[in-house]
Image 1 (spheres, rainbow, N blue to C red):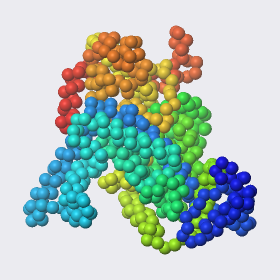
Image 2: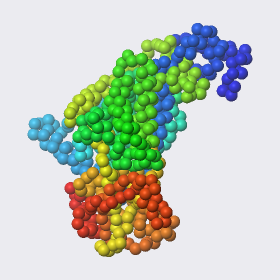
Image 3: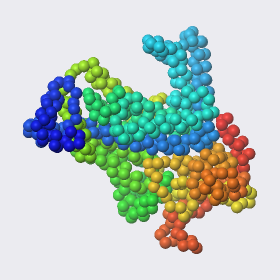
Image 4: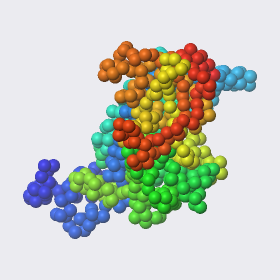
Length: 636
């Protein structure tokens, strides 16, 4: 049947089997079977018409497409984590995760000590109410030490980060916090493997999605500045929603008796609405007048000043000013008007599809114009929930599309009230209630004149508020790091993978991949003084830390590496040794075509001019100076 469904359907035996299967489908409570689209040609006109109309407001295929798209984004996120995290937050990283865990534990000790003193003063006993409830519940579970588990949960809950949120990470299980590199690798690889399954299979279950959520939370909770971007909690929140989208254990792409919960579909649309409306409102409420309707000049500067340009960015920048004004108007429509098509009830189906496709096209254009990490790819994923099976069937094979149609038919005609069925109905309702409750502060923030661009209001960051590019710079300032053997020079410049530096280096196309260090350097130029992590980064450049050096451009990142060293991947051979380091500020602009040709006939991509010193404001710093600053920073 799988090899030649049409021949099977034509033969008498095949026709009998198909008719029998279809009669089984009409029996209440029976499990569906997957049939090929040729079945419709041998059914009665009434039955064929019924199958043909299935897919309207049905989301079996939608869930498959959604999970595959989510798997692609997760693959990127965990691949970036595996390749970069050891140098960024590892044992000898720029901003070690160990420091984050130690600081959270110190805050937890103070909280627990304060709670014990308060309970002792008022005669409440040794247990907090929280621990008592957890202990009583866990004692009902056989083979579980309720008291020990309850105490562990209480310790985790009180170990808080700087924003007073529990640090949710698997790294608490590590016995030796000075050896976290292996843990970071295992978390990233586990997430990568689970993501690959989602991408290839297009299906998942609750343990799989819970594992992905925990892996993402484990990294972003200790990632410090390198995980401080809005798309990190955005990915974690979408994974949280996806837990309620899939069956408990089944890994079938079209699982029997588990249709896509409509409440979760609407919750994901609400999630996309919050992202887009937050991004739109923050632009009108910002002090950047370029977004105002009487100006519409934002896009005159956006492409030249965005974090990481790509190969098409200069082309977008050189479009006429009239086109740039139109781009701003389109942006306001997509982010302020079109999001209402996602959540407004009782809209025609075509309007909802238009709302979803509108967001997908908009994000695709942004992907074409710059390397904005996996942010735009991630924002496209929930848009799929605006497309039903009838729309997506053309993108699937006939066998899978027909299976989804029959599953939808069975869902409508073979309903029975069972305990399992009631459970499957209650869980989405409880999830919807939780989303509604946690959305209250988010809605208040969206309605506030002092709107927060990216923030969380619940301890686990389950439902968040988002926004992007509330203001756009009018000039591009780049931080250029230089080091020398002598305070008198010559000074040699470090080059990054995608961050502009060398004016002759052309941008790359890397999206959805993401170089966290390059992005963080762009953010730092908005700070009046270096952020704490930068001191340790500069120190590692001076001592030529191998892990950090691998985060730079492979060809010309380290100016002190000899040709032999580049080929042998950081051997001990040196072209001198840096002793002093400084950070300069340069203004960058796109070079006009045919201008500033060098003597050897090369045309630069950028033109730049020095505008001042960033660090130190006067003189230079060496290894001993930086070690003293780093020690003081960690102590604080």
